[in-house]
Length: 498
View (cartoon, rainbow, N blue to C red):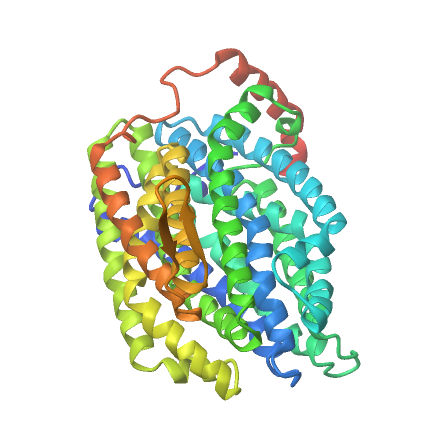
């Protein structure tokens, strides 16, 4: 143990002292690279599925599945948002033992929730696909894909538990390397399962799901091993795996708004995908590719938001809220500048970006319009994601949840209904008639852009109010709980060290 602790300290990034930009960069770049690798992981599925030559049916099927599968992934991210807040604040308060206890309870909660969601998803898979607009051949291919993805949910949740635990402690590099290995496995085996290379039969979208399952299994198993090792920021102790009602309640209390936040985002994505699907296969395929290109910016801004959460959590644990605010300002400005530059390239070469994934001229044409309308506003939404990370690091997951509701369910979905579709509404009693603008598919694209602008304005004002400056970790520890945990640790020390 004496040898492990110095190694653990070397792997951590302490955001409570020193110059903010280099430390923030040191904390953020592994998360950015890890998220980009994860995005590449998703793009690889789309790339190889696009080579099936079925007129875009498989691409449309995987595109429709993106918001649905993201709904379950976002649940994992929501639950583990509480882990980041609690672990980072305990580390900032120099209470590593409590941080370890949080890690163990996170693993328990992740296994329980993911198992329930996987069972529910498999049972209702057909009605879910119907609701989001999958029909005919697209329905068949989407069903083959999503069945395997549901089976992989416990593996996905375990990986998020591992990543958030290390991230809260300030070690972001270890998870990055694990994502690299997992994404590499997925990229290598994708064409074998999807296109039938070598001895494998061509399995299409089901093959994409199988490749994802295998790569996530690699990540989950390696992640649990690393946590048991204990030399990477925090330790998973066998004695801590007994349910601890106090910590579980705190994880749920802090985490459920983040989970609802994720569901709000996911259901909004499902709704928007359903809107797009009503305009045909070509817009649906273009939407799927465009969203994945946009997810590159989400990968960067989400990663910086997570780094910001760690920095804010550590500083609130150390009772330095002004420094936490400075971390957030630095992260937001830097991220917006970077995303603006990326978006400028996409706006300049939209057709070339689409051709990387598909050769169909109609899909490319639809994608060009999508990118030219949305890309100029990506930097604003990147700023929103970083500010949400700051709220989550403070444990103020409710504020982040409300921002997600506003950006999607107030500023996006209703606006899409007004701009895209044909309808009229007469207000009873006063005889006023409201008519939609009927812009078609472009109305949906403009609804996205409007939501980005409006949500950024709200996020900036809310952050400046300073309601997030109080942490969620008490100054005094639960002495009885700590002693109980130490007794549990003594019981499994020999196992862990072995």
